[in-house]
Amino acid sequence: MSIHLSERKQIQTVLASENGERVLIAGFLKRKRVLGKKLVFGIIQDNSEEIQAVFSVSDIGQENLETIAGLPLQSVCAVEGTIQKNADRTKKPEMLVLAFEVLSASEPQLPIDLGPGTESAMDLRLNWRFLDLRDERQRTIMLMLSDFERFSRDFFYREGLREIHSPKIMGTASESGAEVFTVNYFDARAFLAQSPQFYKQMAIASGFDRVFEIAPAYRAEKSYTNRHLTEFVSLDVELGYIEDVEEVMAFEERWIVEVLGRLKERWDSNVERLFGFEISVPTLPFPRIRMEEAIEKVNRSGLNVSAGGDLPSEGEKRLGQLIAEEHHHPFVFVTHFPFSVRPFYHHKADPRTSSSYDLLWNGVEITTGAQREHNYEILKRQLAEKGMKEEPLSDYLNFFRFGCPPHGGFGLGTARFMMSLLRLENIREAVLLTRDPKRVTP
Ligand code: ATP
Ligand code: MG
Image (tube, rainbow, N blue to C red; front, side, top):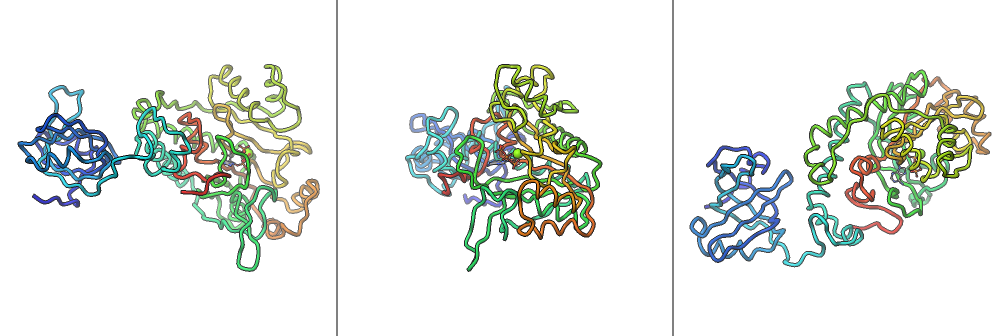
């Protein structure tokens, strides 16, 4: 009996098939139990689900039974058989195996443990990330990340945004000039983009009303934390013809509520089983607090963060807790940041305050957003105020010389989002592969 992989069905589909139906599945041999010389129970797992396959000597013969009994876990096999529904409807169907083929055998000794409560340290797991991702919990994070992007795209297109792809190699260091990677570019130097900031604003100046981009961003930050990577995927939105920054926040919170709703619908039962909680969809509108007030509140609670500046991460954490107690809401927009801690291109609400915000989720920053300054003369004044020169930014400044719609937007790290959503300890679990100051492999 030969196996035709083109007939393969996903295990999730197979679990719903009729009693007695003959089907072909393929996947990794996740666990097995050998009962004497007559019976082997094997759990086969593919990208969608797992199923118990019953290999019995009467159906497959002695030689085949010995093969499956001796096969190392994680080997890849194709298995054909009939579906046996359990009389107890709460139990999953099994498969009675009629034929199987080993497509690719695993070495018997795995370099890491898989499964819940793995003893393997993060660093070792990251060295063997392709195996680590065979663990259902790890793979679920990636599948949900993919849905997060898909649902976001759906929302953005429906709202009239267009997707752009801006270059990641740049001739001038964007924004601050700090924390950029330098690359050899033939006989010259170039830089890796820290964010698509300037280019998404260019798109607005080019006449695309509203745009978004989901693409890598690079930060040469030496900080080795649980929430910073040197390469991360940034989701950026820029909206033209806005009235004020409030419109940007209103857009962002609507997007988050929709995406969380859809993620809950699709993934809640898996999240409950693998992560131990339910996804909660927040109510609209999200609480908002001015930076001044946020600092006061945090200081009143016993922390001592200096006024007039940014909130350090322990201040963000505390603010998140205080807002959760007061408003029973996991999100908070911190608004009215002092212009002194914001980049020159943020629009000013008044001489000392920028029209900008951070969005915190459970006390962790996931977004910075702002209205941008689109008036050429004011923009040049703000640049001077920051002690910066015009010349290196002349390409950027040109965007504002020939008419540019008022606009604003935000940037969000997709891994930060997943980390907050799934309450992960480490952002490294929310990216396919990690790039940090100590790791550029595998
Ligand atoms: P943080 O204060 O957390 O270091 P930031 O203010 O430097 O972040 P922004 O320049 O505002 O970051 O970038 C916008 C968003 O991109 C952040 O809110 C975060 O979600 C994400 N982000 C920024 N830096 C990193 C990083 N090194 N690794 C992963 N995500 C990042
Ligand atoms: Mg920020």
